[in-house]
Length: 448
Ligand SMILES: CCOCCOc1ccc(-c2cn(C[C@@H]3NC[C@@H](O)[C@H]3O)nn2)cc1
Image 1 (cartoon, rainbow, N blue to C red):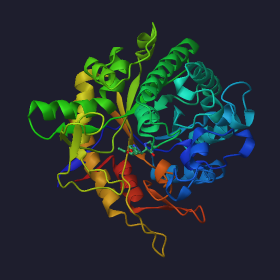
Image 2 (tube, rainbow, N blue to C red):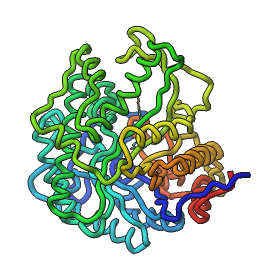
Image 3 (cartoon, helix red, strand yellow):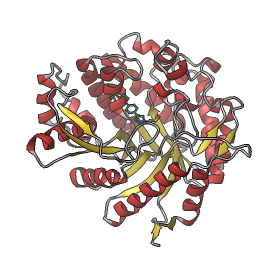
């Protein structure tokens, strides 16, 4: 048995997001978000589920903090709902919104847990969407104003700041594929949204620096690892296009201030061009203190003419699958973070999401023996140690998610939590994976 061990300052945490756990969707002045609109539209979300109540963390956050304290995490990643701060996206600040997050932050600090806050985790105020949303460059300034209010309100309390979560999901998943809010299916629109979100990220970093806010700021991209099925040039090129769609398209602007030219050319061949204005790329590539990477899965792709946007089909090679039908591919975590380090240098990396969705059964004793999820974590923790041993500056890991919660278009059917949420009673029940992670944190390692 090999002992897997981590540096003593390795940051263990868990992650959630406002729309997915809070509920209280009309409480204390909260305005509507695009996810309220989307989930209230019949047929958009499995079982027509919505976030009206979710895990009711708006009222039960103290229970959540107690679970975090018992788990032994050093940090908790959560997001602030823009519509609670600016119900109409801009204008008057809703003081009750700030008051809620002050209670959450103070409860975390009292428990000895560092808050790690995501400013934008998809719940755009609907009032801004009504004016074009992220397709409208005015939304950039609205985001900067929102960020400035939060920076000033929590400076000194929050020390780790994430501007955006998964800009690929915000842009392509939500505006080209159309599976997420607002549900558009237009490639040019998606390219515009991706660009404007990255400019907004850069503008927020600039004001963070200008204000002299304490702590560190970064952003989170969801990176996948699609490898070529063969060494043929066609397969290599097809897999690279699809990989670059989630990876380079976002990482190159963030770190190098330019889009990958082969992808610019590919999108142009599909009728979409990036709406770059003078200064945008310098803004996007503001120096950041860390990069957050969300990793769930990877696989193999090969050339197939006219298959999808990139003439690339995914090849099924018999990997175990999660309930999201994603490959369990721990090697992909090692490969993608090794690539990040090779390509983008020594900027500290945090895994800001990793976890697995499986069907869970609550026993009569309120236990959940989630063997597969525990095995998923064990396998990915081994890759984390392997990365650190190889010199990759991996500084921390946030499990997605603390709680079963509203999994976007999959609603409550898909459970990612290490704590089971009983949606009838809103009771929380730690799963076996919670106790596994608790033990790993306590011992800062485990026997593989
Ligand atoms: C080809 C058609 O495809 C349609 C669906 O395509 C996707 C892709 C990716 C996802 C996805 C979901 N998650 C987990 C979340 N990360 C942020 C946090 O809020 C978690 O809930 N990551 N990626 C969903 C659906």
